[in-house]
Amino acid sequence: MAKGNRKVPGINASSTADISFILLIFFLVVTSMSHQTGLNSRLPEKTEDNTPPPKILQRNVLAVNVNMHSKVLVKPGDMEVGEFESRYGVKVTDVPFEKLRWIAKDFIRNQITDPLGNVVMSELEAYPVMIDTFVIWKDKDGNQHALPDGQPRRISKNHVITLTTDRASEYSVYFKVANELYGAYNELRNELAEEAYGRPYAELDGNQQEVCQQYFKMKIYEAKPQEYTVNVQQ
Image (cartoon, rainbow, N blue to C red; front, side):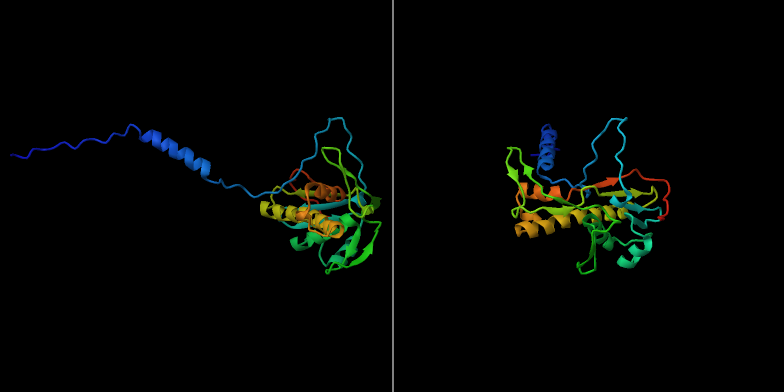
């Protein structure tokens, strides 16, 4: 019997598109999407255009600026430049990242500490005014929560930390600076949690954390990037 040329039957690909579509949906559902690393921050609430800005005393302001050369400049309240530089061992026009958190914590608590954390001075006239405050936090059900010892704490309610950057500065530098400033508040909340509750802040329940947050509210205001940077002067 003579062998003829056999035709190979074609593959039915009519359902290939459907299968591909199903696989695509499957991978979209089960695959975790990567996300950018950033800082959580709360923007100021919108106000009417005719609302006058609040008056803020210079002693209540810790001004942090990243200039066009990505150097960090700091103006701490009304403290003299020479005193600041001698106490922290840095130039106000070139503050290293690793000292920003230390400086910010001292400013918020109106005190001067040494590198080991020991308090050297407190209640400075060049730093924010401190007042005795006792916080009572009400949850959504109206239940009240406060520190277990029932004692007030001296805090600076009117302090402000401003962060400005030059348009030519590196984003990575801005990110490190912001991270240190936010980290100062986190450390203060953790220290209060350890003192008042005997546990780290991360181990407290939501209402206990909220009480700690009320004592150390984050007051970091980020201004629009500038085209140039003004030198820190007294």
